Amino acid sequence: MSHDDHAAEPIRGLPELPPSGERILWQGAPHWSTFAIRAFHVRKVILYLAILIGLRAIFTYGETQSLVAALASTSFLLTLSVTAVGLLLLLAWLTARASVYTITNQRIVIRFGVALQMSVNLPYSVIESASAKLYKDGTGDIPLVLIPPERVSYIILWPHVKPWRWMVPQPMLRGVPNARRVADILAKAMAEDQKRRAENPDQAESAESGPAPQTHRQTAGETA
Image (tube, rainbow, N blue to C red; front, side):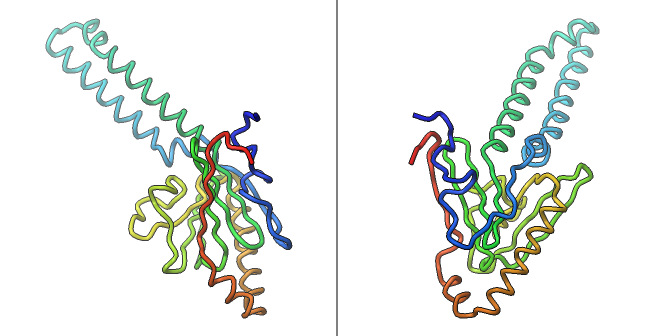
């Protein structure tokens, strides 16, 4: 048995082979450190724990007037804090490693999940618009607005959703490297798809009547 978690995928990031005429335009994964900072808020957690440790040391020093005792009183809390941050970083790395974003000339596919791998297919026919938030390090987030009544589950798809959009969740390509280029590829693909559907209204109506978004599930280690 293969030990590759994604061995059942005919193409990395896709649950099945693309149909005839569909082309992969771009494929990539979020950067794990970006995930750690913007999705798991590691910096904020470190700051919060540092404040707790500092307050503990100040309180103990005020009682004992001993610097040694003050430092010693923080040892247990410091150990717990380092462990917590380490686990958070590990979770961010595993989440990023299990995630693959795929942009084709017909849809966007988000593959995610550490233990239970899932894939969400988002045809352009159900996407109303897309935007991009770029960062100084070259990465960026690309949230997608779906055409009502299409929707995705915020809880299931997190962290691949726009933060705080609980009522109307927006799927999001998070922490994408070279985000400006990826946004341009997506914008061009969506424009070409819209033009193609305008030129073939019967085919577009048939495509829009199908179920979307679609979710495919696969347990880690499962083989075809």
